[in-house]
Image (spheres, rainbow, N blue to C red):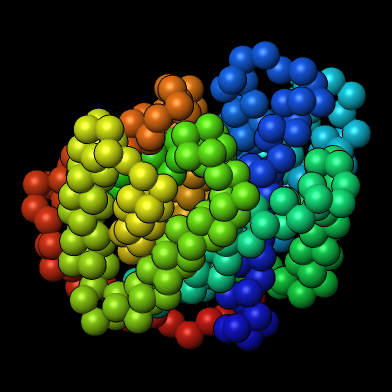
Length: 407
């Protein structure tokens, strides 16, 4: 598989998870009406159940992938995603829909945990960060388009058809993987599922100051983002009274994150991962504090909200790929276990933080803006822990090998 095809496939796998969230946002009011939900924030469970299901099983996928290879485990995740997307489309009750969403998220978790291991199998250092950034950039086109897709479906059909589209997309990507993705883990590198050995692998990952520090940083960054995703539809609908503007504004904000990932792929080779991402983190905190001050003062408008969120998302795009790469870099010898552990921590922890932020929604933008500021400060503490109190620390990375097409 060539470089371009590899990046596109990784992006498509990650897009399966993103579509499961963002395409639902414009349809949350319709789901609430269908099931006669009474609590204002109850519809957020459609998002949170998926995100919790997405975070929990990642610790299982890693060891399975280290034992049986990346490809069969990834295919199993795709099958689970497709089956429960179809079940959600026909769910007759809200509890069954939530259960299907959680299981759909469990399938999507394979598309989060395993691509990181697959990339780590083939690349290291700055080249690994570049591949992650490029795939993330392409994948971020999905949040730009997904709300418009969901809104377009709602114009001509029931919200249930959104799950039909997810079913078809998941089936298409799974078929692509089945026919085109070679196994990236060599037979001699596979490890049996031995409890003692698994415990050692997880212990190595847990003892990595750099790995756990950046995993914690990603937890709070993802938590801020999930808090925004949980309640942004309500912000445009109930705070600003402009639900029709939501898909366009969301696309512009997500586009800033995608643009940042493109810039990161170019800048990381010149500045280094630490110099670039640490500066972006300080910018993220400054932007979030300004936004919180505006929201608390009662001077928030649709323009200030959209512009400041777009700026925060641009900063996020300069951090996420680098933070993930730096978390994985010292753990190549236990890549599967490390990726699954870090994915579970950031996915599950981020979904719980995001759920808490979303549940504070009070028909103002204060919970989102203050949540971003607090999460930014907690992210900084995690980074300082990982870097032993020193930001912008020089770090000499190993040169990246060419992609192993024989894999």
